Amino acid sequence: MVKVAILGFGVVGSGVAEVLTGNGAGISKKADDLIELKYILDVRDIPDSPFAGCFVKDFAVIEADPEINVVVETIGGVGAALDFTERALKAGKSVVSSNKELVATHGRRLLELAAQNNAVYLFEASVGGGIPILRPLSECMAANDILEICGILNGTANYIFTRMVQDGIPFEQALKGAQANGYAEQNPAADVEGMDTCRKLCILSSIAFGWHLLPEQVPTTGITKITLADEAYAAASGRRIKLLGRAIAREDGSVCPYVEPHFVSLQDPLGGVEDVFNAIKVKGDAVGDVMFYGRGAGKLPTASAVVADVIAAARQLTRAGYHPWQENRPEKVLPADQLESAWYVRLAEGTLSTGEKLTIAGGEPGESGWITQPMTRGQLDALLADRKVLSVIRVLD
Ligand code: HSE
Image (tube, rainbow, N blue to C red):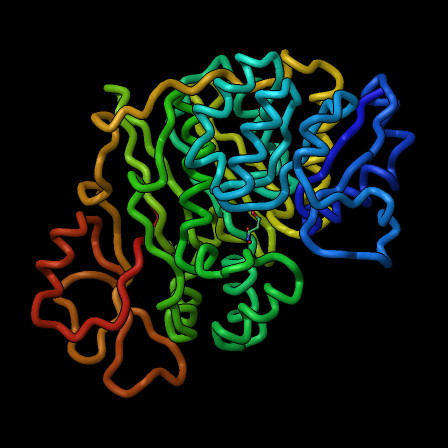
């Protein structure tokens, strides 16, 4: 018998309780053991909940209960979530998490702590919501040296772009829709300023390259400055705007990670990814390009990935884990400044001497949109000196 405690009864935690109990018979069969929800930790009183009998307010109850084998951490953040994760692992309980911030910041140490205590720390739901990505990357692509990771990793940002383009609504209104659907973080700044994508890129990179890439090492630009005019110029060039997390490996073992909005061609599979969907392209030296696609946020898709980890933890306890991450390697992190690409530029007035001019219907008088030749950001800044620049967005090659 495997008894489970869920920490945090928010969007994801409540989804985990629903899936664990609603699909209970099939889940227990696949785990080769009976899986039962015993506790839910939350500071609130929720008397109307069908799980009312499970609620506790003190983590010590869970920590001290020898019947609890698996703890699901869906609190988020790096405060109580870190404390409870450490205590659960030290008590020999496996921990399953959807907490990107915690894994991206403390993942290496928590994996080590799990191994020391004969437990596992699993976090499939922390990247790509319901998409199976971390276990396939860690196990099914293990024969490859990973050359590049490039992904749409934030459902909220992608939902906002889709609503802006398809419904013609402004940014703020589109964000409200993402919040109403349970896609956005409690503080949506993490979604729209790119930190959530940055954290997910760090988790993917740490698994792919074997050493812990830290969020502060990833230059990150969000989507708050994107306007409907930028979207119109993207459409005029046969592209869409997507927030991408990218990590490009060099032959010498160094890695160039960054998060930025990009113009992405509609011919590229990433260009057609809409709504809350995420997609992650991984290039291996043997397999070539592999793409993972699915719902990147939301209650039940995320719960699907969490519960799969509960089953994995129940089945194999110590053998289900990820490979250990080595210490951070600052000397291996390259700046994105040297990365050449074409650029989209929107000018308030005047023209550019080189590049392709874009035309949209109903643009502001004097404004113009351009796609430049490939160049570094430094070369672009030199080209744009003395111009009135409204937008600059990298074009994905
Ligand atoms: N806020 C996140 C997103 C949730 O929109 O992608 C899933 O990690």
